[in-house]
Length: 488
Ligand code: HEM
Image (tube, rainbow, N blue to C red; front, side, top):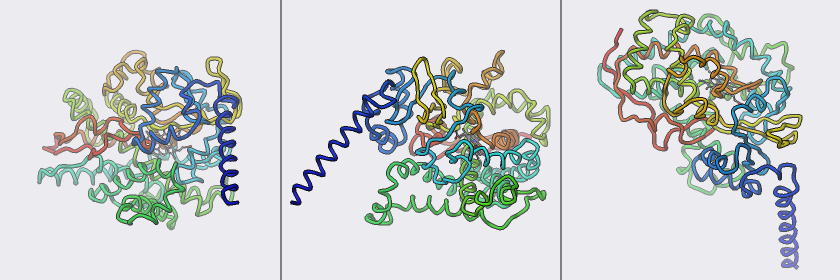
């Protein structure tokens, strides 16, 4: 009897798998989209590269586009388009675009702004925050940013006296996390003054992001694995989970005012007249807190590290920037700094090579999309990746080279619309102004230090692996340098 049941179960499973396979390959609405049949048949193709080949599906997708053309299926349900002229259609500002449930689940903060699946829920949440991230509001934080930079200067000065190696990646991570926490919650951990703690926080974030793909695909298996294996094997995962818990508690602490008595984002959300009660619950605000800390620290710090690394590698560019900065003096404001063309080009180029989200940021259209005669039905997740825009040879010749001058050439203004560093459309980065203010003030301040790089090369800043954001080569210890003296 048992054997009969087993045979019946096995037979049913085979028939069921056969139906799914034929649907995916021959009869489903995406059967006509080119691409490897294995990727159209099973998610295992993607999982292999994402989980077992260390976040390298982006490079496989790049290879597949060379074979199959600009539109391919990257898994059984998703279409990927490598064409910068179609970006505005995928990330439309004027048409409703949902996010893909699979992708937002991976964010681990399901009721946050960025994870809102529905276009309309997203719009309501975004409206409640938009004002807070306006340029006028962000500018009010300028004094606080300068205060943090004074702290950063002291840390560099201390290291200069003892000729200790500084990890700029850690310092910048601490700086941007202090800023975003202050803006969001009215308090911070003073990571700028404690580089060791900043190093731990950066490492925890890296572990959290790197394990994100594992949790996304094999999350169901993590519980049993944790239970079955010695706890020492999972120290890193547990640390990442704890970091998460810490961010939560910060977001939901009592209301605080910022240094200059500014309201915080969470004061704003808690009292928002536009948000219904359920949107102001502690549970949802927790998710918003996680997202803000993650989005606000990692990416900005990455741009700072990339820029500073390339300037230290390129004496002429550094000299030119210092000369330009002399025209405004050491205490220049964000507004004054923005008017400096070379500094603006340096910031722009750093953000280009940051790539923003390196992974596939899907949008789901409510109506048919048509790409070069191929119909993509409503409800299909469609994505592109920033490498196909930011590192596109046609737009940016010699794309992996840090070359600020490309932003100063005639016609460069039109290039600006072809960058995906901050995303596009209604769900693009809400923190762009804040990021810019931090970048201008920080670069203007830290390039005044004479520094030499310490055991740092291109592989420490270049995109090698995609864990939602750009990750360098495995084993990288970040951008490190030794400070010699301050130039002014
Ligand atoms: C150089 C620095 C930064 C870069 C390159 C960057 C990049 C991006 C990108 C590409 C997106 C779009 C994500 C998507 O397609 O779903 C995004 C969204 C977002 N970013 Fe940033 N970001 C930066 C700094 C910041 C800062 C300082 C904050 C402030 C707290 C922030 C908060 C957010 C939030 C809340 C979202 C979600 C927006 C939404 O879904 O409506 N980001 N960011």
